[in-house]
Amino acid sequence: MSDSNTLSQEIPATGAEKFLEDNFRKLVWLFIILVVSLIAYGFIHHQNTLKANEAAEAFTSVKTVEDCDLVISRYAGTNAAANALLAKADLLWDQNKKTSAVDALKEFTTKHASHPLAVQALLGLGSKLDAMGDHKEAQAIFERITREFPSSEAAPLAHVRLGDLLWADGKADDAKKVYEDLAVKFPDLPEFQSISQERIGWIAAALPTKEVDPPPAPKVEPKPAAPISAIPGMPQINLKPAEGGIGATIAPPAMLPPPAPAAVTPAVPAPQPAPQPAPQPAPQPAATPAPVPTPAASPAPTPTPPPAPVTPPPAAPKL
Image 1 (cartoon, rainbow, N blue to C red):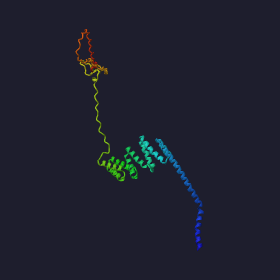
Image 2: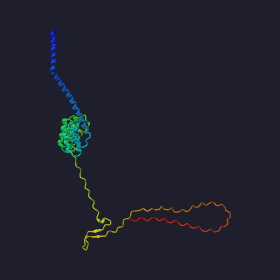
Image 3: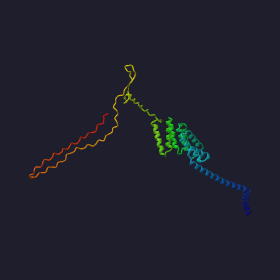
Image 4: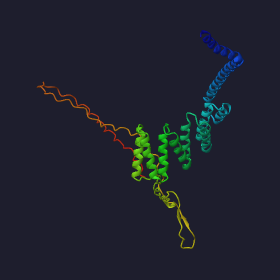
């Protein structure tokens, strides 16, 4: 009994050893291939990381459309190249090259659908198409956002733009439904709740969706020019025929007073006050004087001449 158990235990061991002997070389080659694959993967990943860092550094220095094209061509397939394509679209739009900007955005949404900014690029594409007057294609873009990216950050704004386009196109009922969906799908966004209620109220009030031209400004009648005869110093032109059959005559200019020179205010001297007589001392009560001998007759005092009258300045000539 013990011999049979020992034999049963030796058979599996012998089979495993035989398997290793038969497949040892294969296992070694498999291990070598695995190691080489890991090394190659690490090397490729390292190279891609270096390329991505170099591309990102190149993208941060772009300033013109040509710089963007250089990054797109040299680092194709990187996020930096995709970002350069977005920057190119913005630069073209700022340069009023609207068609080229729209083409760049369409290329981005086609080649970089998995980019983190793919939905925002779609929203920008729809807005630019709307600004260019291509409302039908813009409506298709907004509908795509609401359908394929309902939980994205661009979805509520796409609802608003879609409703506005439908309302401007005269489809008030469809626009109202879009605004109602906006309030239902985004209950946690109070600003879009307000926009939804506001737009629905406008539709109910039947407000116009297009601007109305203001009334024309009143015409200002030009004032008639003064006749030549009314201009001082000009000769009087008589356009009536004279009695003797001679044509228009020219009368000499009316004698007008010469223009007054610039008024120069002369310095007017301040009026001198009239001289006042010297105050006479108050009479003193005289005591009873002693008899005084009669003095000799004194000469008469010289009379003081009166002050010269102040002559007023001459009056300015009347015009």
